[in-house]
Image 1 (cartoon, rainbow, N blue to C red):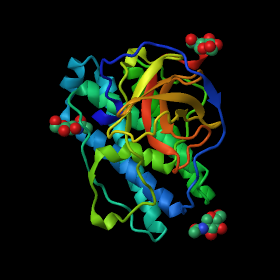
Image 2: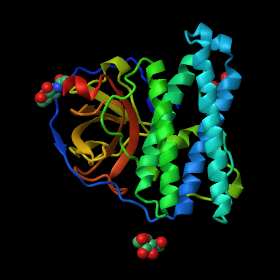
Image 3: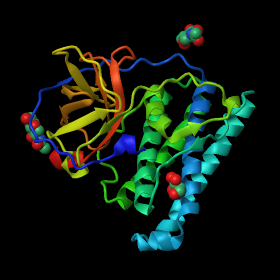
Image 4: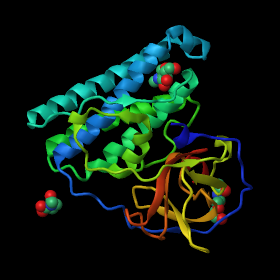
Length: 309
Ligand SMILES: *[C@@H]1O[C@H](CO)[C@@H](O)[C@H](O)[C@H]1NC(C)=O
Ligand SMILES: *[C@@H]1O[C@H](CO)[C@@H](O)[C@H](O)[C@H]1NC(C)=O
Ligand SMILES: *[C@@H]1O[C@H](CO)[C@@H](O)[C@H](O)[C@H]1NC(C)=O
């Protein structure tokens, strides 16, 4: 997970770059409801294991030492129970649909203490919300849509609770961002070490990982931030890149200046707060598979929309 949201102390000076809005959304894959249920179960397994492992790693005393009380600890146990229940619910739904439900994988969460456990928990809940939201339009069966919605609302409540516990705005903006299956898989893949062969392949792919290297307290509207890929990017001389900030109304494109090797500098556009998602694309107005270079990166933007409305 270090890759996804490592916040090193690097800080570029803050300058403005032009922004432009466009509405070309990512391509929606042709997938079945069973695919979507398997995808949801894959994510729920990850969350379920994450909380069970974290609550086995850290005791009530550890949480108290980190500044959290017993009520908070009990609520985390409830969150863990919810995720376990989502797993059994989706498992049953798949069995009822004559499919073999995917099994739990092995994961590497990179958690070292209560603080990093809660930071990762909050990020996972936010990604979960965006995953269900992004998949909703591809669900054919209305009963599944209602079921997915009933999980989404609970994940959103978990997200707010954890964001508050992490001293972040619990609901920083009026809309959540939908992510495509491939975008979510890009974010989940670094946690997954291996899966049982019997799980089969989901119709998803991971883009190259992208992370933000600007210090968390320097990430705010109109500030310049640095995004980096793991591997160097092959770019032609003077080639242009764009940062596409994902939103329900379509991405906002901002120029992303290729710095060197694996670094891009770009500006946080107006209207993005809290856990935001940005991909690097070669073409302004497009976030199709052919044009995306890397990402999404998870970028936590300071403040809330209402403050600057
Ligand atoms: C893709 O979706 C369309 C529209 O729902 C459907 O008609 C078509 O059969 C699907 N194609 C595949 C390969 O599943
Ligand atoms: C639990 O502890 C192990 C060993 O320190 C660590 O690798 C893992 O990421 C932790 N997981 C959680 C969810 O706290
Ligand atoms: C960001 O820049 C825009 C355009 O220059 C300006 O209207 C807006 O007030 C700025 N917002 C913040 C929070 O700096």
